[in-house]
Amino acid sequence: MADKLAQFAARPGWVQLLLLALLGAAAGLGQAPFDLWPASILALGALFLTYANSATARQAALRVWAFGFGYFAFSLRWIVEPFLIDIARHGWMAPFALLLMGAGAALFWALAAWVASRVAPGRIGMFGLLLVGAEVLRSLILTGFPWALLGHIWITTGLAQVAAFGGPHVLTLLTVICGVSVAALFRRERVMGFVTLGLVLALSFVARPGSAPERTADRPVVRLVQPNAPQHQKWDPAYSDIFLNRLLQQTSAGDIPDLVVWPETAIVYLLNHIDDDLSLLSDAARGAPLVFGIQRRDAQTRAYNSLVVMGPGGEVQSIYDKRHLVPFGEYIPGARFLGKMGATGLARNLGVGFTPGSTPGPINLPGIGAAVPLICYEGIFAEEIAYGNTRPRLLLLITNDAWFGQAAGPHQHLAQARLRAIEQGLPMVRVANTGISAMIDAKGRIITSLPLGVDGAIDVPLPAALPATPYSRWGDVPVVAVLLLLTFGAYVSAKRDSD
Image (cartoon, rainbow, N blue to C red; front, side):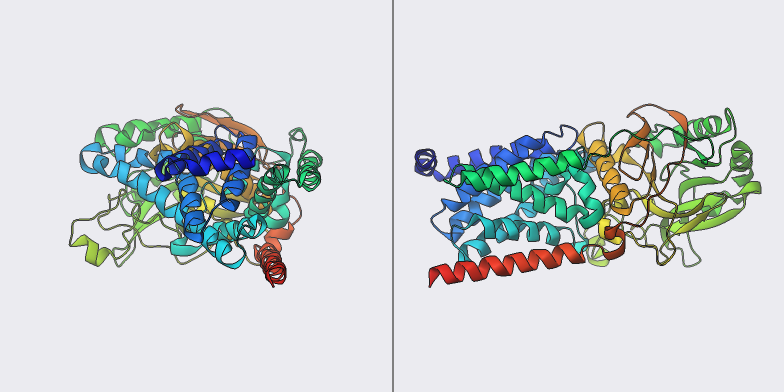
């Protein structure tokens, strides 16, 4: 291995960076829809070896940045899709969005490499711990963007069940431990590497949830309605009635369920303007509570992206306004200044953008119980799911993944929904405009789903909720505390050995 690393170091600098970017892209194969987690582990092992062979902190940071750029550019490739909806206005931004997102996210990893090289040169354990810390920071800084976390490679495996104890960051820690173990196999530390890898993989096998329990007739039946309105047609007046009629027909067919759920912005008119038409929706639901997404304005004309619970007779029983908005999508940071330069968000139907809601969930679903409402982007923030002292019956997520196209984006978004269910020990009802709509049980198993690009409706009993998980009680605090202790221990050990 030393010869291989020497040959790599002898290549021109730009070739090294290109190869590392390609290696980073290979690490992205662990994310949905490929779910090839061994590729991620092997690629991370190679990264740790390359890091340890770096001559300076600057070189280590640059190498890790190149790897991270390849990883994020590949994993987040779906991010160009929103800019292609209105290609004449936004298409030119697509390559810049991908490059900037990849480069910006990789800076967190590069910073971890630089700090690790300064305080404990060549120690891959220290770098690994700081890499986990970088992923925690990426989830929080500048409103956070915890998409394609390293720990997400385990969502389709038994190891995902560990998230019930430590959330997404404990999975990232396990990912890094595996990568360090692979590197150890090539650094004459084979016993440690084999033992550690064996323990993690054994845990993955033991933690497997098995098959989902059989459906029981005593559970409330939820109807998931997917209208399949492509984003380029969704707001076109020529199509609005077509999609609304599709929703109404799918809602009124068959037996009456206990709850009907439509996706985010299922209705393209303002809630303020359809008061007289709510009876049409109520007639279709035939007395069942109806959840739908819609935009609205308040008395100060502020706009909100909302989730509405409607009861019999068209009565609006609850309104939840989206609290965590998408920067540059649903609002423009520094809008007053950037607006003068002509900058507008992608979701620009209501001018400058939306106002974040101020009232958290849960909301009450008649006949079912309390639900934690989540609208699209909010479903990726594990640490923001809160519900006070009363444990809810379910997680309720409505989304419009038509923005993400038909490739990786919807699959990755669905994978994160599965992780939220595991973390909270609650089933999730997930309804998406163009798919993938799914009923997910409290172990993260998909009970049934509607695929991408089809319209339809499915009736499915609501799975049982599990007792409150450790993560639902304590959040990220235990994992972050352990991470800090391990990092401090690694620093003390490195300091002692250097003296």
